[in-house]
Image (cartoon, rainbow, N blue to C red; front, top):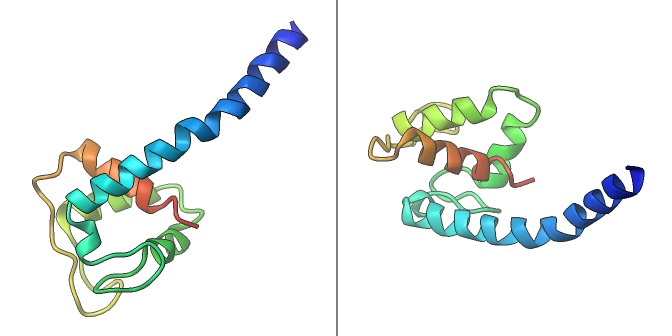
Amino acid sequence: MKRTLFALAAATLVTLPAVTVPVLADEAVFARSSGCMACHAVDRRMVGPSFRDISARYAGQADAVARMTVKIQRGGSGVWGPVPMPANPRLSEADARRLAVWSLSHR
C-alpha cells in the first residue's frame, strides 16, 4: 500500500509541472483577450498595478479570490491610486474568478 501511494505521489509530482505551465500560459492569453493587459503587466506598473503587486497586497488573505472576483466584475477605485478600474460585466463569475486566481498567482 505504501509503495503504491509513494509511486502515485511521485508520478503526480513529475507530471504536475507539465500540467501547470500550459494552464498558466492559457490564463495569460485569456487575461490578454479579456483586456487586463491594457492596464496591467506582470512585473511593472502601467495604468494599474502589476500582478505581482496585486498578489503581494492580497497575500495571506483567505477571501482574496472572492474579493478580486468582485473587483474584476464590478470595478473599483481608490485602492491603487486615482485611476479607477472599470467594471467588466460581460465576464461571467467563473471567468472573473479564473482571472482572479491567475492574478494572485504572481509572487
